[in-house]
Image 1 (tube, rainbow, N blue to C red):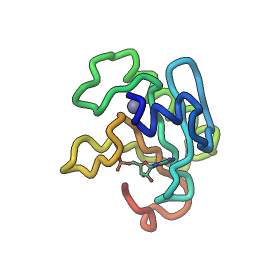
Image 2 (cartoon, rainbow, N blue to C red; image 1 turned 135 degrees about the horizontal axis):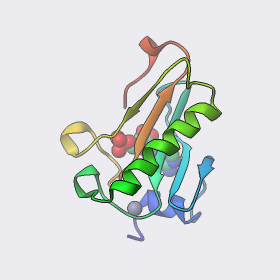
Image 3 (cartoon, protein in one colour; image 1 turned 90 degrees about the vertical axis):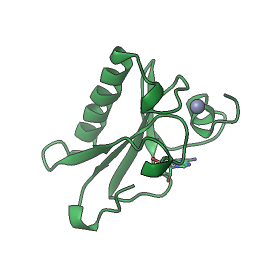
Length: 113
Ligand code: AMP
Ligand code: ZN
C-alpha cells in the first residue's frame, strides 16, 4: 500500500510528530487537531478500516497504546475520548485504520473528528 499516507508515516517516508511507537503501533499528532490533545493511534500494518480488522490482539494493542499516550499527556484522570471513524458515512477520510485520542481543555470546545 505504497500510496497510503499512514503507511508512509509508519515507514518514516514522510514526516510526522510521533509521540509513541512500539513494534506494532505508531502514534502521532493529528495535523488538524480538534482538541488540545489529538493523537492518532495507528497499527503499522495496513488495514483499511475496522471492518477489515480481525486480529483481536492488535485491537487490544491499539487500545492499550491509546491508554499509554493518555497517561503521557496527563489526561488519564481528566478524561479522554477514543473514536474510530469507519467508512465514508462516518467521515473516514484516511483508509488505514486509526483511533483518534482526544482530550484536554474544555470538552465542549472539541471538534469531534
Ligand atoms: P478520519 O476522518 O477519521 O479518517 O481522520 C483522519 C485524520 O487524519 C484527520 O483528523 C486528519 O487531520 C489526519 N491527518 C491526515 N493527514 C495527516 C498527516 N499527514 N499527519 C497527521 N495527521 C493527518
Ligand atoms: Zn496504510
